[in-house]
Image 1 (cartoon, one colour):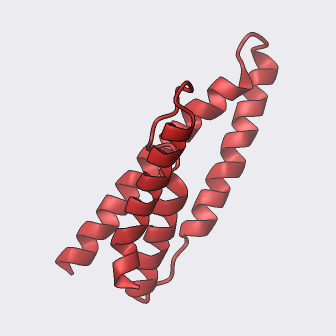
Image 2 (spheres, rainbow, N blue to C red):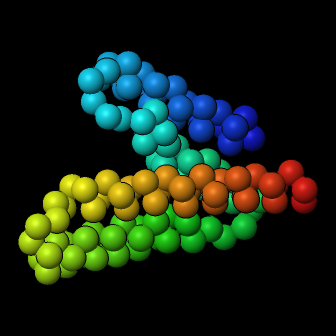
Length: 111
């Protein structure tokens, strides 16, 4: 299980590179598939420490909140595309999950 904590982000990175190579003409970054793998690795870290984890509920709440905010924003501003907003929020999720993973990894190393 401890190996999976380090292996899952690399698997996500390899999947992203594979998708980028399969779709060379799309503007897809190789890190855009990372959040599910990072979230799973974060869950493994909290399970490794045998601590209660609210991570799945937090990301489910984040997803519901993001979709609600995006749909309401698009309803108010008719000229803005929903896809563009969801894509920018997905990038925010990439950043949040990466920071969460790094912080949990540092806690694991130093405790």
